[in-house]
Length: 394
Image (cartoon, rainbow, N blue to C red; front, side, top):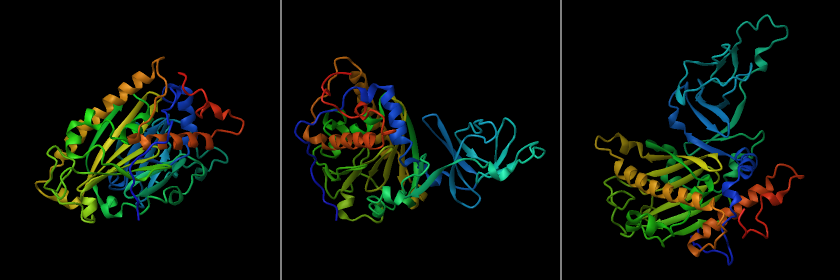
């Protein structure tokens, strides 16, 4: 049974040095040590309703074609022709009519990645089509989410995500459907988004509408270490069919699997390194976080609802969507202000408060990931680990 505790911070805990937010070298190390080795959430399986449906997942110069095959399986092909390396697909999403063709020399691949036709190659001695399928990234589906890994030998998903596999079954997330997606382009480091999401110390000042519905000091956490962190916050009005909406209430029924406690709470979790998951009484909200550079991040916010509720004639998700679009934009503004301030020569690490206990935990987990996954034993790990001179600006 989950045990929820109030956040607390260790004595002397400080924010990270400047370089972790402003250094291109650190960002390059993050790509190799974290993002190229972990499971990354790229979307939902219901985005690919039928064979041939696809979308592109682009990050760090890599492009994946995430596509549903004729056999119903979802695969992630590198968007790279096996002939001369041409990027084959440019449209962000769509439907292939049975095959994927390179626009350069018309090498054509099946939805499963197998090479079907290589124009004029039949006369080349020793050429074997079976040797040139599209390269693939590992794929795993969990609760309707599509995860990919760029690692050659990724850690098995069931082991990496053992803490979460059945944790949120009452919400039936895998059966929910997307009603709305909103994309945001932020001028800040990806870690600032995770940190901002993990505390409500700022809520009375930045989110007066949110604080009106949910007390900023009501947070209690059951996951406080490692890749998965978070817990719940309560509504100010208990038992009033509350929801995080413009009015603070909803006519939508709670998701069918929830108990009384779950109906009167909102659960917020960070899933390192690309996902924020918010579980509400009547919907689930997810943020997909895609770092573009050390000072730019794309965030997609998606709203998931019960498919039976969505089938009703009067279904309208705007009360939740508009509330969180307003709240998101308030968050993004202060994240960008943080990036601007951290960039200053005057920035030095500051002390965390007790409401920021998860932020200290995030930092420790991040630093451990950078150290343990370091590129090689010969690398200078001290470049990535907070040193004794952390109070000095970099």
